[in-house]
Image 1: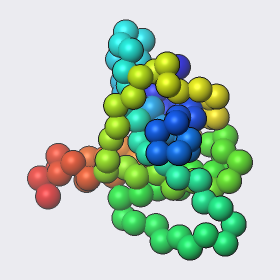
Image 2 (image 1 turned 30 degrees about the vertical axis):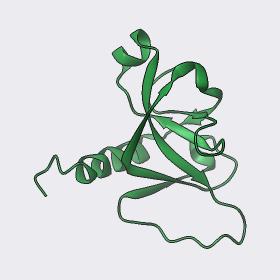
Image 3 (image 1 turned 180 degrees about the vertical axis):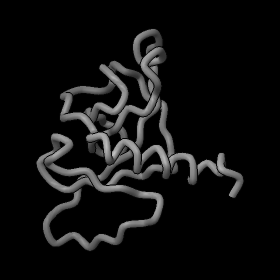
Length: 108
């Protein structure tokens, strides 16, 4: 298990989660911080919020998935199953920027 990997979780109905804890926490602790993501179904209305991002096949997912970058959840690593993929570098940068904006770390 590593940062930026995408795993399934029963949290909020079994959608994918992105691990955003650092490597040290992932290696040493039983809980990690994840982003909530929701798989989009065909025909489902969708509007991307400025603090959300989308992941797709490039990241190892079967369908387009929206991740909330400004809200974090702590989960037991044991609750994560079925590694789905790894967030690509460009999306990692986008998520990190939106995480900072969402937490007002930049002062806004």
